[in-house]
Length: 382
Image (cartoon, rainbow, N blue to C red; front, side, top):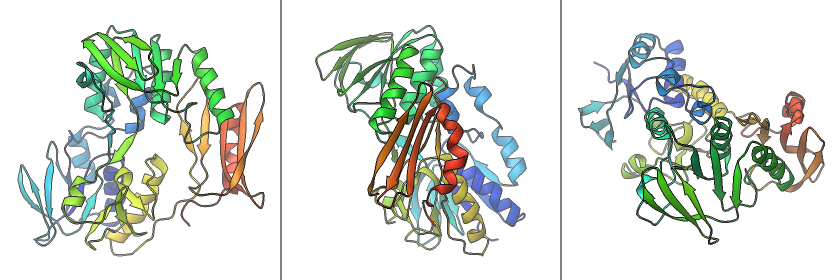
C-alpha cells in the first residue's frame, strides 16, 4: 500500500493545501497530522472576534469530522510529531510511526515570549490558536483593565477589539508609533490618534520589564519607571516560525524553513508553506501568500512542478476605528514615502528613484484607492 501524502498542520496552510490537492488527486491517500483539535477556523479572526461576539466554538467553521468527510483524508488530531526520519520516510509521534510518500510542513509560528521578570510573569497570556482564544475569553470574563504588549498588526487589532468592547486598554511598545514596521510615522500617528480616540492609551518608546501580583490584580512595571495596573496582561509582540522539527531533521533553516520556488526543502520529498516557510528569502505570515502557496504546491505534489508566484498582496489591518491597508515596499527598496494627509485619511506612497510605485499605506477614506493602486505595484515574487 502506498504511503500517504502527509501534511503536518491543520491551519489555513494545511487545510487549504489539502483542498487544492483533492481537486487534482481525488483518490490519493492523504493524511493530516495536527497537534490541535483539527477543526477548521481562520486564525486571523482571533484578533477581532470579541466585538463580533464570537466564542471559540463559533469561530470553528467546520468540525474535524466534517473535514475528514470533505477531504476524504485521515486526520490525526491532538497528535504531535516529535521527529522526522528522512531515511525511512517516517514520522515519529506519540501515536506511533507514520510513513509518508511526500511530506508537507505547515507548522505555523509561535508567539514570541516577552521574557519578563516578576512573580506573575507566567500569567501573561497570548492568543495563537483556537484553544488559546478560548482560554483568553475565560480569563477576560468580568475584566476591564487590560495591558497589551505590542503595537504591531496583531496588537493594534486586539487593542481595537478590546477597547470597542468597553475595556480600558494600555498598549506598550518599544517603537515610537503603532505598526512601525509597516507604516511611515505620519500614518502611524494617524492610526495612534484614531485608536486613542477609542480610549486606547499608548506607552511608546518603552517596554514591559516585570509583572507582579496575582490573578486579576497585576502591577506591570515599564522600563521608563512607570507602572500600570491590570486585571489581564496580553502579549502580541510578534511571531517566530516553528523550526525545531525541521532543524532536528537536518533540513536547511534560516528565519524560516528554507524552501525554493517549488516550496521544496533541502530534502526533495519534504515541502513547507505558510508561516513556517522562508520562500526565496521571504517570510510572509499573511493569508494571501498562504493561498498562493497552496495553489502552487498542489500541482507540484500531483506531478506538475509549479513555482509559486506572489503578486502584490496588500494587507488589510482589522482596525475598524481606522480602516488600514498596507502594501509595504520590499526589504532593501530604495526610495521615499510621499504622504498626503486629509481630514478623512492618509495616503502614503513609497516611490522609487524612477518615481515608480513600490508600496503604499492607505488609512481611513484613502483605503478606497486600494483597487486602483495595487495593480501598479511590482510582484513580490514574479
